[in-house]
Figure 1: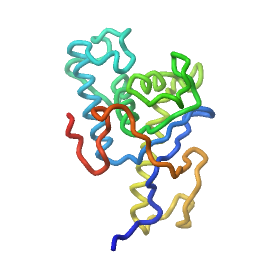
Figure 2: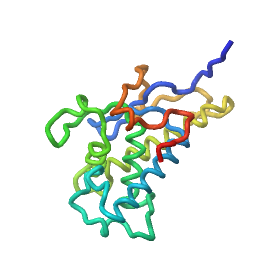
Figure 3: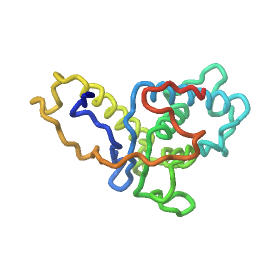
Figure 4: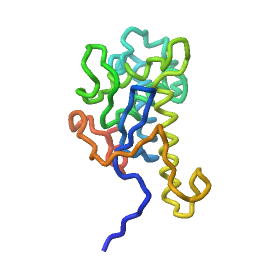
Length: 198
């Protein structure tokens, strides 16, 4: 007879990016972060070499040489961090809402694509500030992922200090199953399996 661990998030989680915009994500693990980093580095290399992949990320108005140096394909800063956030979002975002895409279509009616995620992630959360939606997504998704890893430790004390679960206004749990996303060739790696597409 199998055993089920309690207290560990299994379904999608809603993350608020601001007062209106939200995303629901699959649970992230270290192999998702590693795969997102590899994919972002591959995209940075393609962009630096020949400008390929620019349109996948909504960057076709940029010249390849101005985004990446051939010798420095850092994906943890600048445009590279955007590529990393998009790849992590592409692997984890199940559905989203609270905004319209550039073509006027409500986001709730469209499956997230790399290009659409990048278009959202490049926007500043508030006019006049330098914080983008990609930064908010990374901060909340990666903080949540670290918390889930701690939940696996039954003796871990919750942030409330009393061992009891805490509620967050920013991260709400849903019980719905993740919807399929994109074509099978665009599916992110399934939990527990390495990213063999790279």
